[in-house]
Amino acid sequence: MENFEILFDNGGGALLMTSDFCHHYDIAKDLAGDVAALMRGETTEGWEGNQPEFRREKHAEDRRITDGTVARALAGKLPENMGGHMQSEFWSALISR
Image 1 (cartoon, helix red, strand yellow):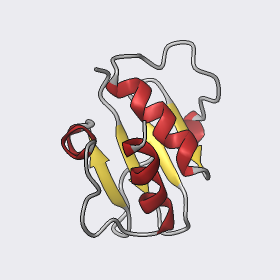
Image 2: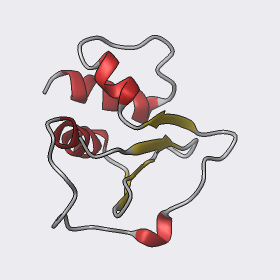
Image 3: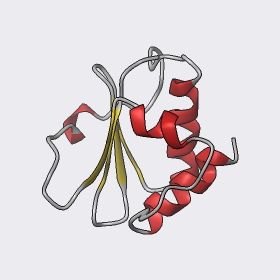
C-alpha cells in the first residue's frame, strides 16, 4: 500500500498527500474513494488532479491520519470523536465501501 497522509482542516476540507501526489478535497465521498483505492493497493500514478502547491505540514488545528494506519484499523467501524462534518462524512463513506 502506498503511504499516505490526510489532513482534515478546520475549514471543512481535507488534504490527501502521498510522496508524489497532493489533492485538496471538499467532498468527503471523493476523498473516501481515493483512500479506499490506496488501501486496496492502488497507487496515485496516473491520477489526475495533483495539486503540489497545496502540500504542507500539519497545522496545530488539523486532525491527521498518517500512513493509512488509522484508516486500516478503523475501516470496519466508526471511530469515536470523529471531528467535524468533513471527517464524519469521510468515515461514513469509507466504511460503506
